[in-house]
Image (cartoon, rainbow, N blue to C red; front, side, top):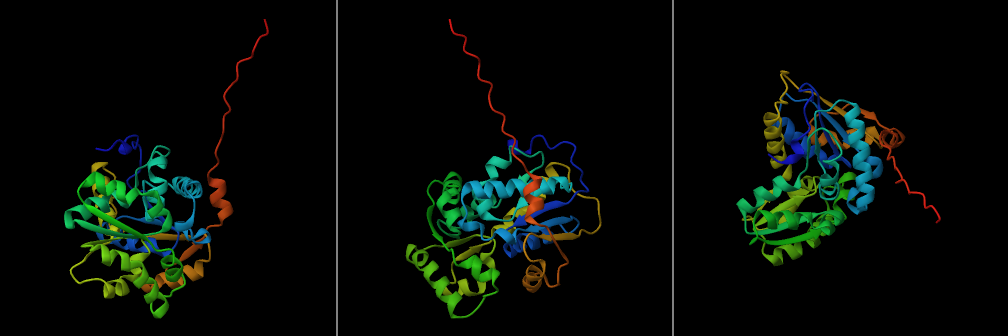
Length: 294
């Protein structure tokens, strides 16, 4: 078992699973988790005040993730799922060493599944995820002979968060993004941002019907179930629940989320000031030995 599972003794199986994203993209992961784990409870945070994550620097993402995980730790979560590929690409490896509960990301489970499906893997993702090269590295570790092409789609998240899910503007953006992947001859498309499956109805129109669509939400849900069982952290509750928190405008998030959740979620506002106070970095300067003149 991977060493990131170590040091998880003492966690409460009745605790919630923390799930976070910059906005409504993570709802694709939440729905997959609920389908796989209907008895588990979830704490969902949409950091809409700072979206999109996909154009942020690594240092910014790392700071945001540390703040969120620290806040969730104070809420007593037993596990966290990064429902954000950008966070998984830029911060996962670092924060796994900093917190005492398991933290799962999207990229490794998706890559492991992708190489069992196809040989020419196309990835659509945010600029930050593409620039990190994490998907390429992990896919090559899973299968050195797989061919990979990736495309950054900076327009997708703003379109989705503004509820622009149809029309010529979004179709033009999708056409432009997929053109190099079609030329590449992909046989499998990985949705490298949790927002992007919200555009699958349009994306499918521009790809050959033979192309497999891989949503990492499904694969990380299976990984989460496996981790809970391996660590004896499965709940004994009969039915789970979800608490929603939003760093931006709760009503705007709830209206947008309702079309995918099938209900109007009760959301609570979590100010950025609370998040930023949750995590503080203490810097200890090394002691410089005194120099004694001879």
